[in-house]
Image (tube, rainbow, N blue to C red; front, side, top):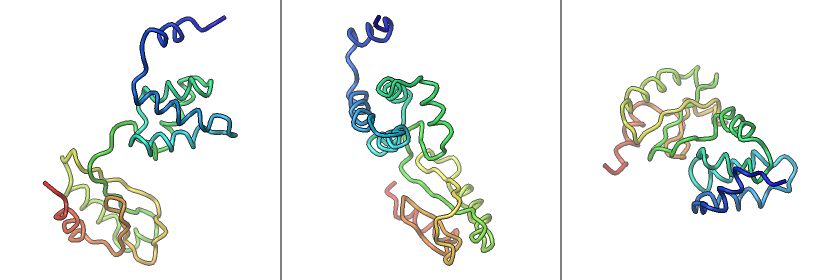
Length: 160
């Protein structure tokens, strides 16, 4: 017997282009062993984040509950649930960087970009750049021996 609710809705309502894309990504890896994390990473790479509608599509393709997929997305901090901001500043908070001023750098970054919707400041725990701490990544570019002035210089290169 067919699942009445979702199947009838699918027949009446066409999927969005995003939903079709997510289903294609999920279908490509559905046969692999334990594909959920890889699918979530691929969806985020393709679309910038994992939306609520993506969770339902992935669950359907993998024959999992929405709760199972949602639980995985919400458990791992690497998965975004909302569109990413234009700029991301990540400051290493691991021990080696902490020993050379990462706590102050993180505070300075939070204060500098407070209230800006286009900038996200995140803490990470090790870039593997320990000899050059404190380390930070600005828009995906790793930097060593970072100071608050370095963050200001990086910001000056952003378009208004």
